[in-house]
Image 1 (cartoon, rainbow, N blue to C red):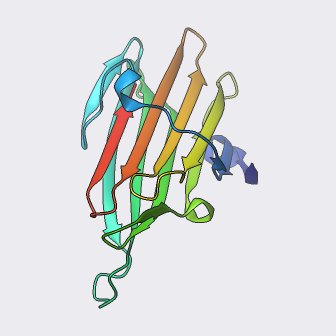
Image 2: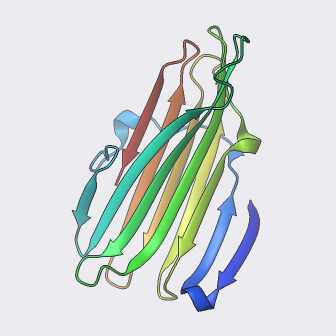
Image 3: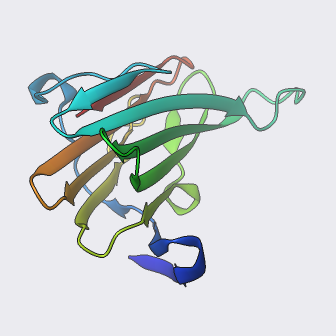
Amino acid sequence: MIDSVNIYAAENIVESRDYTPIEGTSIDPSIMMGTELQNGEKIIVGDYTIEYSENTVCLNPHSRATTKDYNHTSHYKITNNGTEQEWYKIVQTTNYTYDGKTARINKDRCNLNVTKYYTDGSYTVNQTVDNSSSTDPTHTVKLTMQFPSRSLTIKDVVTVHADGTHNYTHYE
């Protein structure tokens, strides 16, 4: 579902869109192929470079409540190797809560923002939240970007566990 569309020609942004996930089944991270990205990593894929960073913030750190509320954010920047021209900027946020017995991904507070800088690029988004497990829900983003010479797919899976541990898996 598209929440908003902004076009800023003067700033060289061709398109910027926000997406919210739908309910669905998750991708099993063990079947994902490609390179797993780590926080702060920069990798080269053909003619393009992917810069990846992530951070997690507790939204109620001083609360005495047993339920904790968190935002996990992944940032991707895709540039052309030779010219350093930025093609895409992707910011994916997963909001979740856990209380020691259950975990839940708050679908309505999750977001994916894709900013495209060139008209000859295109992309498709598949984003789901799977809350069918009350102990290990997942938020999955699959984004396929088209470039003039190739395509590139990023898969991002956030799994939250009821005990407060998390798994963040990011593949190119």
